[in-house]
Length: 560
Image 1 (cartoon, rainbow, N blue to C red):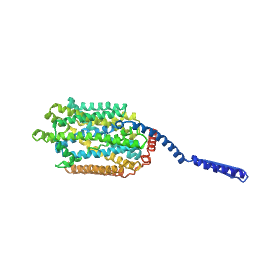
Image 2 (cartoon, helix red, strand yellow):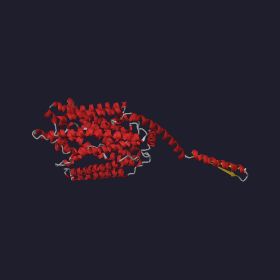
Image 3 (cartoon, rainbow, N blue to C red):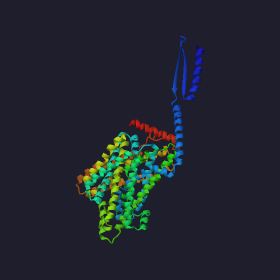
Image 4 (cartoon, rainbow, N blue to C red):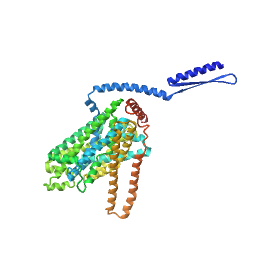
């Protein structure tokens, strides 16, 4: 009996050695009882790590073969066709830099400072390009948009607080679009302002319905709107014929002359980055199919960067055209009436100024550009609101597409209807202040996630880009906080309210600002849990990155 047990022990050890090579182990133990009986216990345990590695290797090999086959087909496709397959997101998000709020800021900058602040636009758009490139790479690497990243990363109350602030920012960004569209209908067709607001709301819902045909249709609408705005403002520029030497000089030589030059330059610079664009850009990138090979990952990133740069260059030229148009008109000191009109130039007064100087047709072209600017703004902000709500809530797209525009468009329509045409300038300024207030709560999470991307999935020169983005973003947020505090203190000092009322306001506002700064510090220094959000391999191993992305998508489907 003991000899037989020994032979079984030897067979068990042999099975154990063979099991180590196949991913399983077998342990046999024979125990001889006092009565001479034999008790044999066998235990079998699967070696999870070894089995998982084998499965991952098999999946990697299969995915690698598919990626190689797809790369072979891609090499046969012309480069310009591959570029067009990635074109669209940059043009759609660039419409935010041509909204009525930016148009009004450009008109005022040109009327007061002529061409001296063009350099702010030139250097500002480089900052925008850097920030938007981070949103693009975040979507490419993780397969998620910024809202989904925030939902999975932050605690319950933090992510819901971010969601609320971003939704307020989307509504604030929609208001200038509604105002500009309603005013454009009044300029073009002499439609009452309130009726124009209602038409804007109806047309926005109608255009958003085109997304049922795919993301590319929405991007095509954005390209059409941008081309229309570009053509109209370049026609206006050709009417005034500005001195190109002074325009180029103002574009490359920084100058700050005049009493309000510094504050106007900061206002021109601060409206360039809008919170909802960071969410929208990362969402549109995810809509593209990305091959699991490292080369395709890098090609995709390059194509998106080039497309975004082309769109931003076109936007820069349009903004320069707007500033140059009013700068040339208001620099003509021979027309005394124009000096009074240029002292407080608005969207409405610009139409009257163009009509008096160049005729009714020029005013109509301006109205058409304003219509395209306002309508495109309401569509893109509402479209971004859908991705933001879907990312933070996790609800199905069909439900989001029905309810999200209501939370964005309807409050904007109500505010614009109550404010009315006389308060267009004030409403646009208030919306700009709200956007500057909300901006850090979308910018800081993007920078934190991008910093983790650099560690987990390093790209060439990505570390330097993120560092530059951090420095410029901190400067912008610091300037905004400074002007918030300075403006509030100035209002209290020059206020005609009783001292007791000023004291109560100070007691309420200063703790709020302290909480605001504390929240930013929390977001900036909180460590990102990158283990579940980012792949643990470099981008050179594209098959494992793609497998990781597919696993995360499967998890999302299971959650929802």
